[in-house]
Length: 221
Image (cartoon, rainbow, N blue to C red; front, side, top):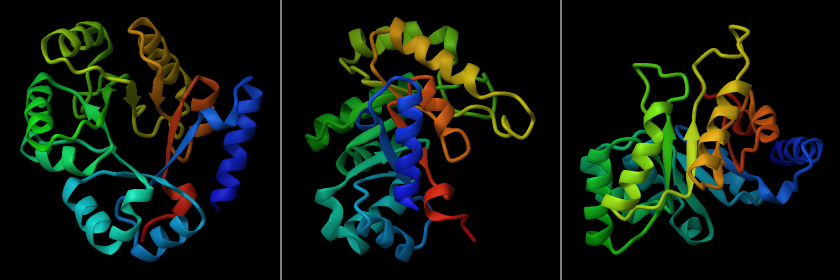
């Protein structure tokens, strides 16, 4: 399965005039059974995305503790401020910075733990009230505040197009194009966008990281 996904990533990259090695496959291991994660690890996958701090702690400091130093672990789910210390201690990358209160908590957590995870800002490209993320019109000011006030320097942006975008016939492309435009305007090079159903489209719009779960592991029970 992983080989097939990598082949599709490579084909999409080549169609876009890009190098396949410039696109990172993040295996979304949230809620996947251990045997599935073990199989993907054995296939050579070394970048994993988790949604919850506590679930990730159990998995990567207990069940798969031996593999932890060989992988990159990314937090791709919402982060509560009271979990910031644990998140900084565990994750190599936090993709879901979305509010100033969390920035304050991360700064304190970095100081407490001595760990400096890479930071992405989550952007709510669809401006959905129920979804986390900075709305596009506020992003420039948010990035400026992160840099000047908190000395946080995000290296990427992340988005999740509105649920059912493909099912409803709406194209995810405009959301990916918007994220790429916002990143370029703010001097940010990494774009975490595209999931199992649309990662090939995301690559064509400049994704540097794609988050693939069901297409890699199979549907969860």
